[in-house]
Length: 435
Image (cartoon, rainbow, N blue to C red; front, side, top):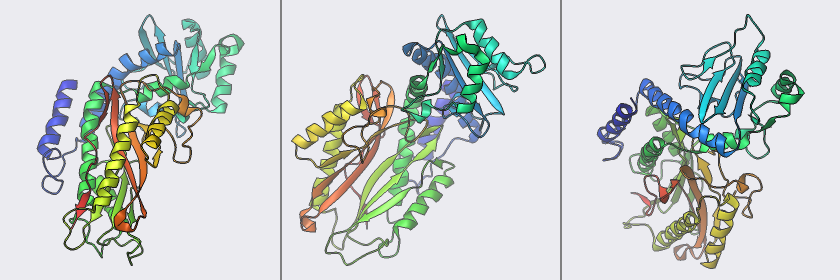
C-alpha cells in the first residue's frame, strides 16, 4: 500500500505539471482527501513502530502517557492519531509501553482510536482513572513519561488539573516514577521517515511554484497591484489547490531613497519580499524569496542587488556548514555568526525546525531578537533526519541606492541527514523578475 500511494503521489505531481512547468500552464494535481489520509495513516503506522521506540529508548522512558481533553488537545496528540481524527474524544488517554523492544499502544478511553490503539477501558466495570492506574501497575514501568517541561510547548501539553488527577489515581509510589517526557515529544515530532523526506521535496516545490506565479506579470501589474493584493492572491491560490496555510502570507516592499513612490502599490524599481508557508500531508513549509520589478530598459536586477543576494546565499552556506549531529542550536548559531563576522557580513540568523508544525519541535538556532543564543530550546542538540527552515538576513550597502543598505531576507527549507544539509527543491540564487 505504501508503495502504491507513493507512486500515486509522484505520478500526480509529474503529470500534474508541478515539476515541469509553471502553474498556469498545468495546474498542480493534489491528492484527494481520501488518498492523503491513506498516506498519512501509513506513515503513522511506520512511525509508531520505528521512530517512537527509538526515541523512548534514547530518553530512557519505558512508558509514555498522552492525556488530554476534547478542544484542549496536547500538541502531540493529533500527530499520534489517524487522519480522520480532528480532536480528542472527551477525556482521551494514550499509553505507550516499551518492553523488550516491543511497543504496546493502548487507549484508556471510551472510544477506540482506529486500528492502532487497543481500547482497554470497560466503563461498566471501573472509572477511567482507575483503569489507567491498573494498566500502569500491571506493567510496572520504572520511568513514566508525562508531557511537562520548561523548554518546548510541544512537551508541556499535560494540563495542571489532569496532572493532579493522574498523581492521585496512581498513588504515591507510582506517582514518584513520573518524569518529564518533553524530549520524547520533541524527538517524536522532529524525526522524519525517508518517505516523508522524499515527499517534502515536492511540498516545497509546490510552495516555490506558488511564489513564482505570485511574483510574475500574471499577478502583478506595476502601478496598479498592491502588496496586499498579492498576499490575498496567495491565500486564494493555496485554497484553490486544496491546501492549507499555517500563517497569513506577507509581501513587503523596499525602495531606493530616490524613489518618489510611497505606500503599498508596487512600482518599477521595487524590491519585493514574500513569506509563505503551506501544509500538506501534515507537513509544513516556510519560504521567503525576493522579486525585482524591472524599470524601463532593464533586463535584470541591478548589480548591487545581485551581489547582496549572493551575500545572503553565502550566509546560508556558512550556516548549514555548521550543522553537526550532537551540536546544539546555540553552538551552531555562535559558530556561524563568528564566521560571518570574520567575512564582514552583517548577519542575523533565526532558523527553526520544520515538520508537523511550522515553527516545529527541535533546536532553535537563534531568534531575530536573540542573536546571543536562546537558553533552553537553543541548548537542544541536532539529530539526523530532521528538517529546518534556513531563515536569516543580511544587510548590504547598495551603490545604486546611494549606499543605502538593502535587507535580503531568505528562508529556504532543508533536510539534515547523514549526507549533510540539502535544500528541499533548491534555493533562490537569482531574483524573480517582474516586467
